[in-house]
Image 1: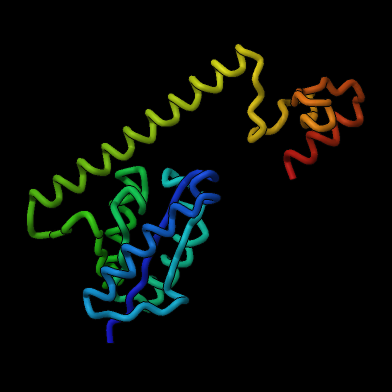
Image 2: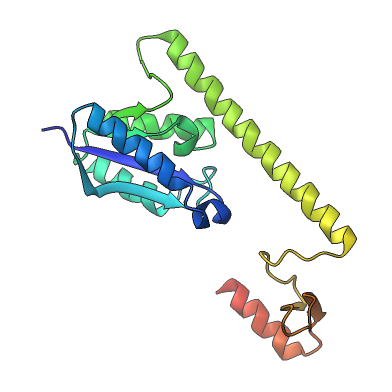
Length: 195
């Protein structure tokens, strides 16, 4: 019997809250059933709200452990950019999985080690995903700068060093950052930040 797994990932907190990962999982389960295979619940590895530019993700770590223990024969992933947004990381992970005899199946990409065109397409998709992530980060940075110049505050970020965040209910309708004058409060904030 072939033991299969699925891996799904979304990067933003907003995507995680809106459950956009469910469409990935449904598509993966449908393909597994279409291929005549059975998926156990414990072989669903999901990273909800984790960036694909980082290799350290809880779901991915568990999947890698299962692969290294020769538990998984085949892993289904929606697309290469769900595995990683960095081409180099995609190659590291795919090679690692194949080293342990685990086949990688992408829903939107037919992977073939014998076909140079297939390898080229995988490389191009990886580089485009990396480029796309860089553009998203640039737009995000530009938007935050524009909002800051207008005086808007992004409540999803923490207060900068030396400031405390005051929510709109406490500040009577408008969120703001307040300067921390108390030296002990600043030191406490530093220790809270470094854990």
